[in-house]
Amino acid sequence: DADVTQTPRNRITKTGKRIMLECSQTKGHDRMYWYRQDPGLGLRLIYYSFDVKDINKGEISDGYSVSRQAQAKFSLSLESAIPNQTALYFCATSQSSTSTQFFGPGTRLTVL
Amino acid sequence: EDQVTQSPEALRLQEGESSSLNCSYTVSGLRGLFWYRQDPGKGPEFLFTLYSAGEEKEKERLKATLTKKESFLHITAPKPEDSATYLCAVQAFSGGYNKLIFGAGTRLAVHP
Image 1 (cartoon, each protein chain N blue to C red):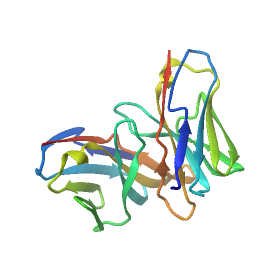
Image 2: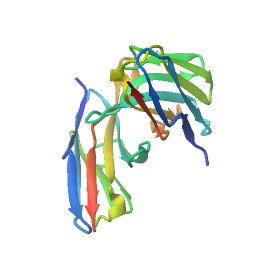
Image 3: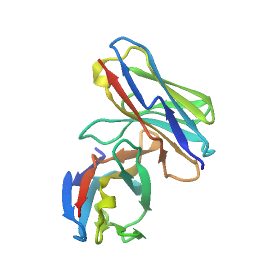
C-alpha cells in the first residue's frame, strides 16, 4: 500500500541536542509538509515543500529547519532542542492537483 | 484572522445515540473544508472534503454537511469503534499559498 512513514516513532532527548525526524512516502505525491500537534491546539504547520527545490516556512518555523532530499523524503531538524518543542510531529503529503493531505503515523518527541 | 473552532471539546455517547459535532470557521476565501479522524497514537485519517455550502458527504455512519459559516459531522447510531478525535480543517488562501487551518478537535467516546 502507498504510505507515509516516519522515523523514529518516539524520541526522548535533552535540551541543546540536535534531532532529526525523517519522513518517507510511497504515494508519489509532490508536496510534503511538517506539522506539530500540542494538546488543546490544532495542528500547526512548520514547513512545507511543493517540490524538491521549493521549501517554505509555515506559521511556526523558528527553531526548526528542513531538507527535501528527494521527492519521497522530507526531514525535519531541531538544531538545538528546547523543552517547549516537546510535541507530536506529523508529516503529510498531497498531490498538487488536489487539496487533500495524507498524514504519517507521527513522532512523539520529548525534550527534557 | 482565519480561525477554526470545534465544539464540543469532548462528547460521550451511548452506543446507538446519534449526535453532531460542530466546526465553525472564519476565513477569507474558503477553498475547502476537511474532516479527519485521529485515533490515539496515530496520524489523522482523511474522511471528507466539502467545497460549497449545501454540499453533503456520507460514509457509513458519518455524514458531513457545510454551510457558509460552519460544518457538522453527524454520527448516526454510533458504535464503540467510532470513538476517536475528529478534526476539522479549512483550506484558505493566505500568505501566498493554500494552507490548512485546523481546529483543536472533538474527542468522541462511544460506550456500549
